[in-house]
Amino acid sequence: MTNNIKLGLKENWKQFTLLVIVNGFVGGMIGMERSIFPQFAELEFGVASKTAILSFITAFGITKAIANYYTGRLANKFGRKNLLLFGWLIAIPIPFMLIYAHNWSFVILANVLLGISQGLTWSSTVVMKIDLVGEKDRGFAMGLNEFAGYFAVGIVAFLTGYIANTYGITPYPFYIGIFISIIGFILTALWVKDTRVFAHKESVTDNTPQLDNVFWETTFKNKTLSSVTQAGLVNNLNDGMIWGLLPIVLMSLNYNNENIGVVTAIYPTVWGIGQLFTGKMSDHYSKKAMLFWGMFLQGLAILLIPFSSGFYILSLISAILGLGTALVYPTFLSTIASATSPRQRAESIGSFRLWRDLGYAFGAILSGITADLLGISFAIFLIGGLTIISSLIIKFRMPEQIKSIKECIEVEEVKKAIKANKKIQIIDVRNKEEYEQAHIPNALNISLQELKYKISQLDKNVQFVIACGKGGGRSADGAKLLKEFGLNAIWLCGGTNKWLKIEK
Image (cartoon, rainbow, N blue to C red; front, top):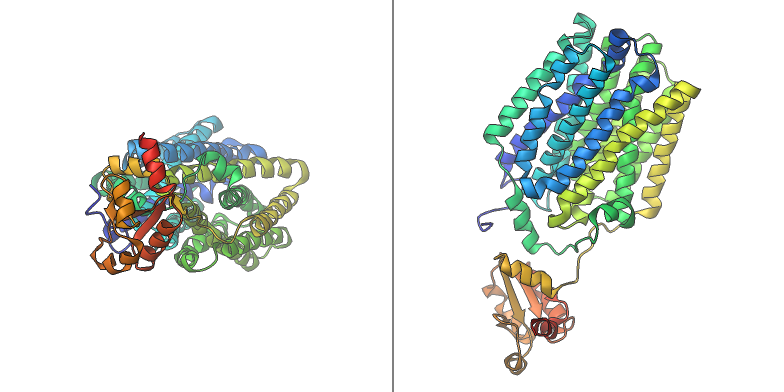
């Protein structure tokens, strides 16, 4: 089934490009609300409390986080495309609900649906792109994905701000959402293909050890995964604050809707465009360093906001914030993907995105309550300080080496793979006499001394499992030799003795 499947960006550029376009439409649905919602709340519904205004972000963040998690859990069972389609179906009524809303509770309900839709659609496109490209261009792929999404956020935020300034807060800005949701659904239904088979292909040759408990390891235990997860949460915590409070700060400085739209749009636009470069950087440079400096730049930019009032200074701060976020966003995903096996990747990404997008809710609640009790400036200082602390956790907790490679493969894993008709060949590297005394059924006997002369005869598309008597001696040397010649090889834990003992 996977014989004709090829991993890679060039090999799958048509489907990949389509998914980039689809994710642009996904991002546009958030941009519809980005620059106008505080004014929409105050002017249309008389909601003045910062906590109440930010309640729409809280509803969005919680539901998106939960949808992220279950998209990761269910991606292998129901298929990525089916979840993506379902997300678009949920998105279609949202702009109509905002246009015809008669009270603030109805607006909150619309944002609950928006959160579910975003979790299903964005998580699906992330996993599908990772499936397609394999390991080589994973960071670049995530950069393109997040560029499309957040560039669209910025463009649509600017457009809705401009339209609101020209024609009023409602209904015209929400017409953009109607167009986006319908076109997104049509593109997905007609041309997007499911990518589960690509993940199966990669799992044949991937040696990354599987996690005992994906949620627990991603959240707390694994130093790499948990460091990335806390940074993701704090990143969206400060994004939730910026989303809700920055327009209010600009309104207090007497900025009109068009200028508010410009300043608020610079941040996601730089964030989006920057990922075209930072995604590729994460394939070649230290992911840990990129995550540290990205979070540190964000915290610094946020701390400068209360000291600024000029249009150009605030625009520069918005750009620095966007740059910091661009450094971390594709790096989050490529790091999670690198540190997990293909079989568990969707669930680990879902767990990460659960916590990351709960940051929206935490940020909205924390900054809203703090702003109401102590003032907006204090709320901004608090969020900026938490972002700096997050960067220090990355620096001191996260290991430099991302990928943990399993040295050997367990007998049970090999048997399961063989039953699943995976392309696996066991090579017994003992001498002929040892082999004839007892050996694994269907194992090919090539002694370690002869192995290097037979390499040219071996199929590079096969996963080789190297066995000796007890495992770890000649088998480890044999696996190392095959890897040096570019073949996929790993030695068998416990060797022939363990295999035959289990069979008894």
